[in-house]
Length: 223
Ligand code: HPA
Ligand code: MG
Image 1: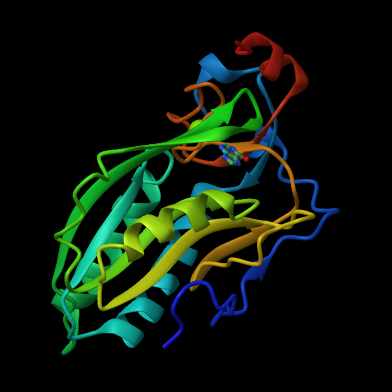
Image 2: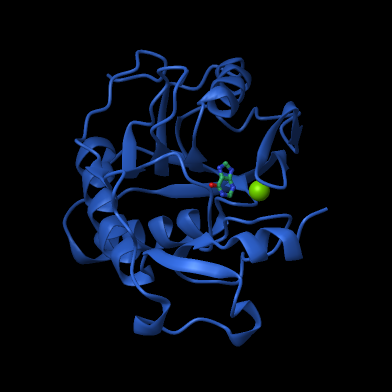
């Protein structure tokens, strides 16, 4: 079993190259209150949903007929987690395999503006004793892998039978910890992205596409 920390990724992540310019904002709808704040649509919502559907199938194939505890990492992971759970539910009711799930939540915070801070806050993770079965822990985004490593150490202390991590985005960064999720949505260049619950100082969570923020957007919402 590919338990986290071995740095092995079972799937070939769908890779977005460094020279990918994104889609013109003209091609898609997005809320008017963000006009001028975005540079491009980096990953359209529909593509995220299609990729999530495939991840659900892979997870079902690997873990089907086990009981799992989904540990949703808030806040940025809530949308990915909700959509992934929804897809797994659809597979469970439409096929011979089922994947009984319970869902729990913890909260992590480490970013101010577009910079990762040293102090990582874990909220709601004091008692994870419900992690007796298996865990699939959707982290929304993994850049240095530092956050994920910290979280995993915490989760492992509660001795779950197995840990599987699903991450929507993995960034190609220098000095990455080598920690990769077991299930990866997209591998992307080292750019700061927002939308689909990913924020910049709490803004842009209400945007359904994953987008690149513009310089003026960064200034506007800077703290
Ligand atoms: N966007 C939003 N939050 C993040 C990112 C990002 O690119 N990387 C790590 N946390
Ligand atoms: Mg954030």
